[in-house]
Length: 261
Picture: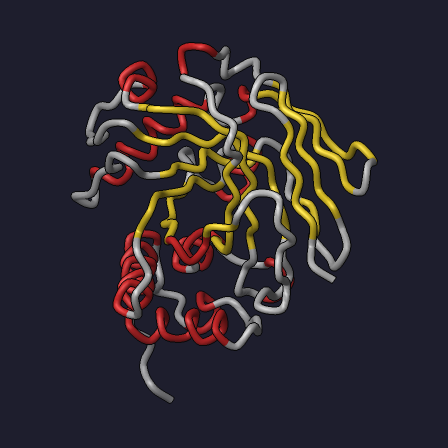
């Protein structure tokens, strides 16, 4: 059997995604896969996609709640990449035929007005680089069976990224109390969770600062014009055919997502 390498792991994950199939943990077969190597797999996977014509349009954070971080044994969120192929138009049904087991989580989304480069980015500096704030959804879809993975597995898998939706409604950051911004999540009209922006690292700007500082350790930055998904405000809910997930925000409006039948 061929030896596991960064390139082999990236190819395995890309094949699972393109063939709409899941598989076991890579760490079960490659125990030496650590967090730093997993980010190299993630970047290699991104390189495969941009080489095929996709364009990087932003970044995302994962595991932004302290409870989830404690369960995974980390003290900071994960980062992943967004490309133009992941963007979904707001209000349109979501085609599910290219997804394995999609789940949806509501997010506070930033559109960047300025380049944000670490290290030592503070939440205040991060918020000053934001052009506008939006409601959003991320559709996550792990390439691992039953969403079961170790930390390096999910990092290599681009933090379970799949699709994202950004509301066309926007507000300037200084017009909002982002920590207090409320969100009510419903599935087919039934409320399943509520949260505020404080669910994301205490404040979405803190998550943005952490993302910039994390990327800086890899010689990278958050670029002007990028979309940044700051992390799920609630646990993710399953998106099936005909299912409608709705997020009602306090100031940012209401956004809905329906799985195509």
